[in-house]
Image (cartoon, rainbow, N blue to C red; front, top):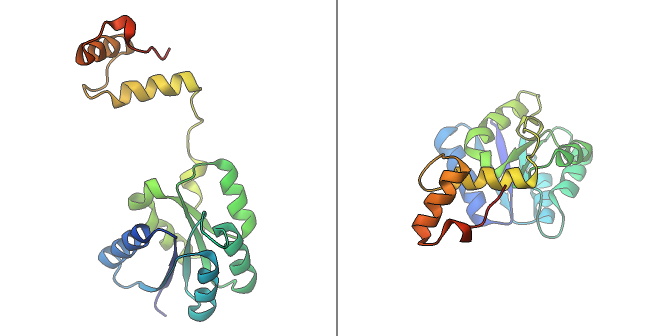
Length: 180
């Protein structure tokens, strides 16, 4: 039986991106529908009985978590993959409690989406995206790290970045904010 996929996201550009990725790299999979909100996702799941449903967490009418819980209850043969921009270990717990079989971060879609769908089709789960994240840095370290990483002149020490930033902004180093 062919693998069928239902995509539910309230942003058309996201649905289009997922479709294009699947069509280009996995033409043997079939997109059976695209839903723009949670209610439509439930109706389309009932109508098409897809192999996998990809659900955005934040959708109008019903959230992805509400939809996942209902799909898990009424259509246990359908595998549920949550697709979100939210990075949170708590989210992993909530998606598992709702009955989802995996989570993919939108920021990691090109790396993880097809791999996650493959895992779900084979009966496995996919929660590694969020569970394997490092502990967040304290806010002051995070700002310093971001400043160093995003500097257009490359990875450099904070003091050198401060001097170079002041030079580029035509300001004295004492006027450039410090993050330490």
